[in-house]
Image 1 (tube, one colour):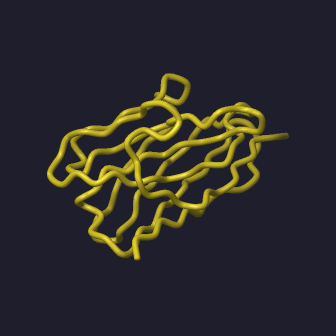
Image 2 (cartoon, rainbow, N blue to C red):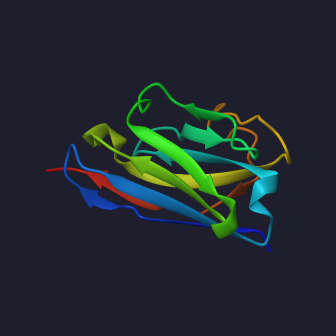
Length: 129
């Protein structure tokens, strides 16, 4: 059964860092693009970053570009989101999601769910002093 599990969230002070992990099971990670989304209280879910199945394409929403870095380790079935210089407005539940597309240089951050069919349960990130 295809499963995604996020971890690494927590409470951090403004300016701090966290690294989120998305561990997948039940499918071959290198056949899937992975997206990270987030949803803050009272707001719509938004795409934060994505990486194509080939790893050649990485995208970021403007508000995190230069602060967040997405990467993947197919051997470990894991995708990471390194988050630096965190701000209170980064507070949200962060989700990873998978979109089938082997050998592809494509990934998307469209709308509140993009083309992603498989989702994790989310991990809470709180940025506060």
